[in-house]
Image 1 (cartoon, one colour):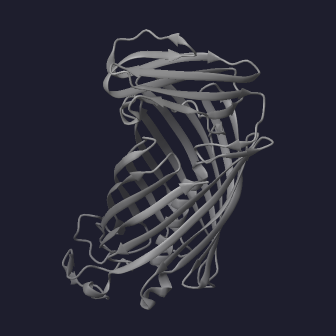
Image 2 (cartoon, rainbow, N blue to C red):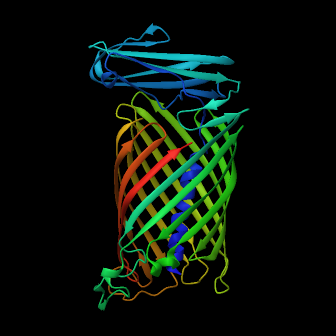
Image 3 (tube, helix red, strand yellow):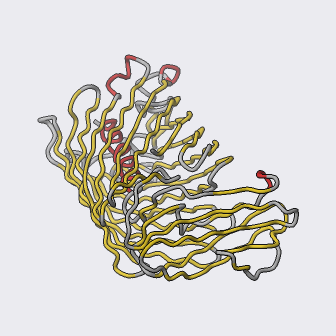
Length: 435
């Protein structure tokens, strides 16, 4: 039962990630042009997270920050043919506020370094118009409808798929060892996950699936399949704030049998800002979930979670820092599974359009099961069951272009628990892309 709870949590994390690609996003559309003169590998990088190569916007005013990076000093920057004032340097940030008229506007940016290497990028912006096409971000549009399709394929080694106790383990004054010998725990697994995400005039829709298959027949009971679908709505409250809400249905099958059908309602409010140093976002949200389990021995369950998510994008280095703080209550259909929790997650990723990728993360959670007794009360964790899982993760890979990448990921989790301690390592290669 505990394993199935953890599988459902992992699946929800993936689904939430896929859905977040849509909510609050601008309608980025079609590839513009980029030209190079001189040595292409030495030409200055032109970066911005405020504009896509081609996009439809709804607001008249937009603050845009451009970041220019090169190994040599950048000596000239032209924006729509006008020379910009700045001190020559290897990193330059320029912020401008644009007022767009109805129709189509083009912003052309040219950067030249001291060796004469030049790069040009053009951004096509439509105000109150629609176009057909495909974007470098994978977004597609027909008659105002924008969509993304995301695909992830992974092969991983899992050294403790059943979350069995390492042996031997001492909990207070009790010595225990795992049911499964450590030498028999490791397994490999394949996973494929896909999501289709669409948006039209503030209304979002999404659907997808995830499948995990372990190699050993003894772990067939861990294989899982999940199908999800839903819809959402986002509305701008001001120039720097947006309200989003969506509903999601999720059907989970574990070990070849129906496990649960879950319903989620998630309202969020988001506040964003930017300055020459970077871009910032605060999102406050609630998650209301109901769970209908297939087994007769389980009762219907619920979950309530309050969350604060913070994102910071460094304009100079194009580094993204993300933190999530959440607290709430949950249960999995039994009295013993009723728990309160608080969690903290901190992750860093780089946002280059191509080249070497590296990320790192750290997180921990405190989960108190008020109706379950521990194996021992002599641990300092109290008189009820307490789980304290800690996550350390990193990844190294390559961004082939703006839509495809391959990553080697390493996750190490250890649970300091007075009931169910374990250590688990998952590592492997994931190929991800947008269509």
